[in-house]
Structures are given as C-alpha cells and as structure tokens.
Image (cartoon, rainbow, N blue to C red):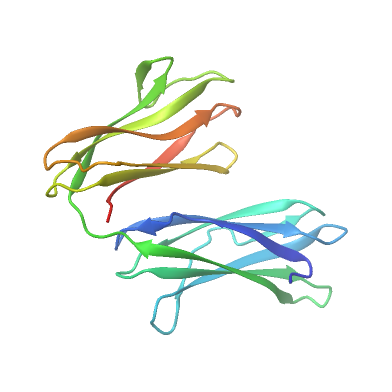
Length: 211
C-alpha cells in the first residue's frame, strides 16, 4: 500500500499493433498532508531482460496534498503482449527519492491485419462535420470513422483515445457484431464527446480485427 504517492490508474489501450507507438497515462495521488515531490517510472514485462523502459517526457512534479497528477508517457509495442509496470516515488527530506507504489496493466498484441481508415467525421445533430471541426462549449457529438476491410471476410472494430485540452482522456470502441466483407467500407461509431473544455481535442484511432 502506498505511503504518500498512490498510483490510482494506468490509462492505456487494451491492445496495440507491433511497432506502433502506445501512449499511456499514469495517475498518481498525493496522500500526504502537504505538497511533495513525486516521480513516475515504468517498464515493460514481456519475456526479455532487461525490461524495456517507458518514456515519460516529464517524470517529476511538485503536487499539492490530495491532488492527483497525470504523467503522460509512451513506448513502442514489441512483437508480443506486454505488462506495463508503473512505479511511483516521493522525494524525502534526506534529498533522495523513495519507492512507494506499483501498478500493472496488460496490453495485448493486435493481430496483423490489412485495413484502411478512409475518413473520420464528427456526428452532431444528425449531420457529419469534417475533421477538424469547430464546436462550442456544451456541444455533444460522436466520433465516427469509416474503415475499409482489406482482409478476407472477418469481424472488425475501432478504438479511440481522445485527449482533452487538460490532458485527460476519453476512450471508446465499436466492435462489429457481424463480419465485414473484404473490400467493404463500414461506419464505426466510436465515442461520445461532451465539449466541456476550451481548446483542442485530439484523437488516436485504431482499426483492428476481431477473433
């Protein structure tokens, strides 16, 4: 159990393709009664030694009491599934970092596939808006994407990680219940979005096969 720097969540996709960049977030809460320095670290367990590290462009922060800090990082997906190990540390009066907490999350390997995302739109009030789209505060909309299956007939799905202006994320996915024929293009309704922050929303979309 964490003493001061508690890892509350690892945000990462459930699967990723070999060689792709995988963006993650590690949320760490300050349980101490005043502000402390906190640091994040991470590594990937997937059957090799030494474990591959996770890159965190900003790995330290001074965090007020009771506040959860979000550390963003990334790694390149190897050719097999991985277990993310995230670590937290707090900075002591002795001038050293003290290990405090660990949390894990699995990311499976997406099977190789051939498919093309042909277009992405914002669906609002029964109309399609081209991306990038201008929306106003309070708007509710959906992220839709069109995907063409270049495999043989199979079930396909799409998953999105939407990053809000403050760095928090919205995730969503749409798995087809029936197979998508080779060469067929279908619409996927991936995620619901409520515009409650000013600024730019960005999305990372993944198109994948289903077993």
